[in-house]
Length: 205
Image 1 (cartoon, one colour):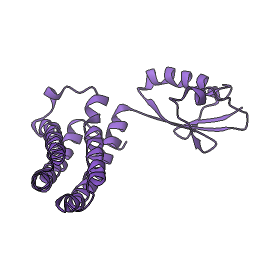
Image 2 (image 1 turned 120 degrees about the vertical axis):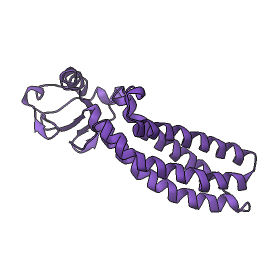
Image 3 (image 1 turned 180 degrees about the horizontal axis):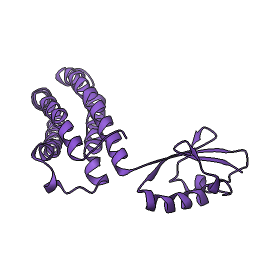
Image 4 (image 1 turned 90 degrees about the vertical axis):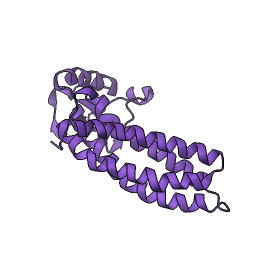
């Protein structure tokens, strides 16, 4: 029988399952009790894309080692916020580099700016994700946490302005917004994120 472990713990009751599909069905039933979701499935050290129907149909052999990671919405929210914080630091450095390319009209700045915009909106998605994962009513947040979420809207609007200005070839104005407004806005969000995490009771455990 396959060696199946969830969050490092062996589950003998699942070892008789013959395919990934059956395992995922059992895990979904388990998740209704624990409020956890499957965030990783690895078979013999190879990660499986559980959204791929072909991979879901894979058979499980007796010698297979199956590792499953399941996490609560609170844990996922904590991880999402931490990745967003890491990205925020990187983005502020990337903005400075992109601004130099954007200011120098002789350089091909478009690929750099496009990557920056894409990464910025990925950051915004990660930063706002806890609200959706926890189904939180923004009206129930404390004032600082509410400001934290509204700060994301401000950053989004500024980035849309940068994109518009760059399309219009108004590069100097776009640079001004990036340096004078987007970077301070991200710094403000970082400062508010601690209160946001506390208000939603986000922690590593």
